[in-house]
Length: 498
Ligand code: AHR
Image (cartoon, rainbow, N blue to C red):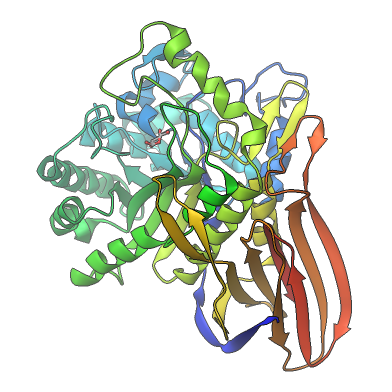
């Protein structure tokens, strides 16, 4: 029996920012070096960027790219990586040498080639309010002062016009270099925000936060009036120390209350009457945490085989299955539903590690999550409208911690387009085994196309010589009265109703 799905296109939930489909790239493993930035590689352009990777990033219309970290940034000094003389530095976060050949100017050039907004995360670990505001001078002042003049001398006459800035990364965490107490954090963010605003009052400022009331309330009470965004991060399948990816069923358990952090932060913003002023930047998220044993802890590994070599396990493409695609679609549905307060979300990261694009010496692999972004960016609408189901199908799945979780089997989102007629519905079937049919009453005859992302099993994946996950297009033609569509097990679907 199909589940009846009612859609009211007249009842608008909100217009989502395209920045919900943002991304993040960090100086970690093969994201920058041996990743997007490979000067002299046969597939690289005159500026050293891999053209195959750039093309893939353009296809999912990356709207904003957060850089350079992440933990990396908390001991990073941007002045070491601009100008003709680049001295290698020891990256104290990830304990490798960084050649500093990729710095601010290369990053801004990358963003221009992709066609995305730059979003710079500053060093609030070992850095200072002055170092942050000097960085804004370098990027955004016309020619006043030594930093703008330095940028000009480095060959960039026009300002870089970096509009989005984050003060700090996860400075609340014991693992972060230069971690701060809530009180210290409030003070540093306040002084940093003041200095940045004195340089560029049009810059939009975010600060690292988490959905912990004590930390957030202190931050917001100290400097809510200086902030435009509050930054939160979340990874669900945690494996920094042991690379043991959860099964499909356990990943479905993580979809339970997938937007709990958003609701918690929304409540704090509302309590302080800041919910009309400050938006949430969910600027690091991914089903899978990154694998980097013996560094993100107090105990540091000795010998590169204990803390560097294991990072290659992030590159195992068979890890990224339909579980990752289904989870990612559920997360993006949830962010669309909360688009009144979530203005940005950044998949962490875009390239290699746990990213949606994997690169190797001869080319790239588009992992299952890449195709979810392709479907949402290129086929879903910008206006979220009301949708309700006449019944909720549920399924019980095992949680990684050993208990059983009951989750909705279907995850549905309806959208319209502000620039053209029609609707697009994202329809996710989480069931690992069974198809589920939905029935959508049609107010008027419409041409319908169904795009289905799936593989031949819940564990299907893409790899260098293996296309296990694809998007299938089914044209249903002109439909009248109602639509009945069977959603395949473990599938992500976009139903275009025009
Ligand atoms: O695992 C990668 C790290 O996750 C990022 O560098 C940091 O921001 C988060 O803790």
